[in-house]
Length: 537
Image (cartoon, rainbow, N blue to C red; front, side, top):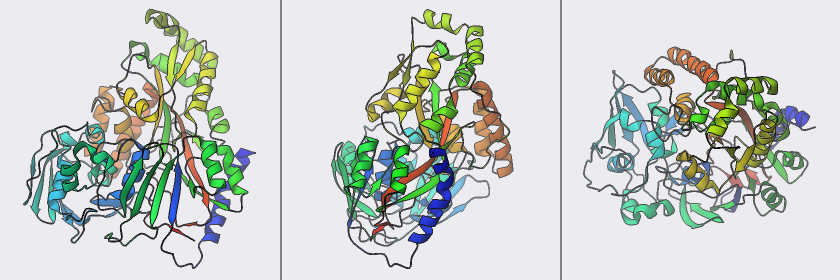
């Protein structure tokens, strides 16, 4: 039934969308309540890595460049234009004038230098007039590090009040696209000086909404920025409520306590279709849900073992029964709607007998005993994400599949922030872990480098270290010709397939139900949640 529903969903949603596009004038005012699966880890975009944090930052902050609605096309943001030198190593941004931070201070070139310079290991920066001191103690800027920004940026300089120059050490094809990502948001230096590390709970930017309050594990409240440079938002306030249980969150939507339900259970989507008070918004996800190995442990160094696990897990059954068909089985780490996707790769078939043969050939069971283990651990996510509707159910399915090839699996989970922090440390008690990714900028590098190039930075979550792969990724970054980059990334996908550093599980279709009164809410490929143009009937 659900497969049939999924196949007809696109047409239905097209009709729904068409019906909704009436010649109605947007109305100002009202409070929208957004129900989401978990709380934010923090609200300083330089130091966060999770979607629940970024969806708030998306509304509080702006970057030099932004992504257009419903696409990853680059459009002007706090910079109205930019120039690139002939050698591709100097980027000059011309800033928008008259923009104020929420605290009333001026957004200018010095603020840009401070916002991005604070993440640099060697702070090779030059202000125009300011003399702001960078925080002495700050957490690791994980995005900055994982994207090798210290190896890329030589210096940042404010030439005058509205001109900023980035001098690069090398050519970097994705540089402009990267500048639209959350970590590159421009913050109020004055507020950072005031709050220090507590800025994570007192964010001040230039965005369409201002921060009001944060009640941990309950709600974050934002209020309209009436002086927003791109026009005041229609909504008076937005409340982001944390409701971890998918079923409870959907029930809150049905009863009218929330207006938008993020990540419903797939089985609830049919209920939403048949509810006259609701509508659905959908988009093919620019995402990947995956299962990875702890590459810091000797147990997982033999690729025959990794291939065995790829054959042992019934990914189609997971997509059919847990995603309810609202997704596709993934054979590559980048999604099919991204350029350079290698469609010539043949995915690993579900074949438990072949898996057993490879495990025996590689001496897995003996190696497991030698490691002092009778079973392995599989860490499963405690919250729904765009790429995985239910981490624990997926974990249970994998546990059953691996039992069929004589492997005992213990499922492990933690609170979301703890899960991310502990997984980053690659602990000895972690054998396998579930995670995923939603692309930040539409460039394959944002998947292939950030997820898998462990030689680039210790913040890459898989910590897979492969010289051949690293060389390919570096060539892809520096090749300015898209045809050359496509060829390089297709080769990188072939290497991933051969070495199996992770098991690609699914690319999900993102479908969110909401009340009919919510107007002009659009899903974005990067999973950004944008409230600027949303209004209520």
